[in-house]
Image (cartoon, rainbow, N blue to C red; front, side, top):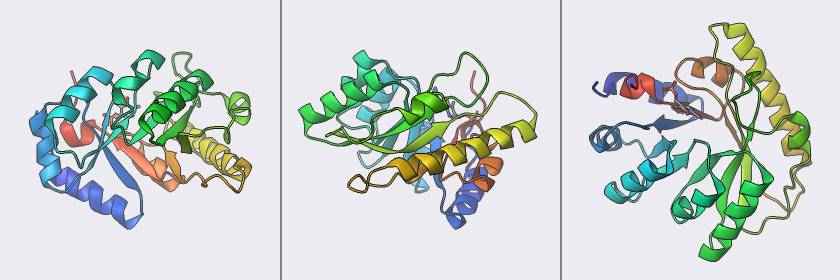
Length: 219
Ligand SMILES: *Cc1c(COP(=O)(O)O)cnc(C)c1O
């Protein structure tokens, strides 16, 4: 399946006017497809699997900003810590500790988003509302918590999706309030995928993660 460059330009323009960052989700897609969007100016790409991300990082231009959007196991943090631009799916304090440790070893501050569990589905990773309120946010020397990430329920009911995004925006605003003044204010709310990015943008997304609309469906 070919890259849909026309669709890419349309979405990119639409998002630029709204100041929303487009993360092109390239998981399972070949290097050539990524290069095609890279040549059109795209620099932010998202991947879900550590090994695949490391292989692509090796083979592609070094000015790409790699977003890790999958579920990250603590024992794999060290593999992406040297180069990852933003870890979207930080879903436990244990994981934050490990990212902080690896960041310290590399003398680098690693940007993270806390993943919030908004969907009712049991399989989704992330903090629930109460856990989120208790995540330590100012004790990290080498982690910068930049905001929140979430996924809506897998459903055709777009009003349900919208209400979940609304809820996440409220959580994001109260999370930002909690950040002490000596810590940089969180600016990123990563919500919205191919099927629901327009709704996410209407509800306050600052960063959408779009795969299949750009690269075609995955097997
Ligand atoms: C795969 C994936 C996406 C992109 O999904 P599409 O529906 O193809 O746009 C976005 N976010 C996460 C966390 C993903 O795993």
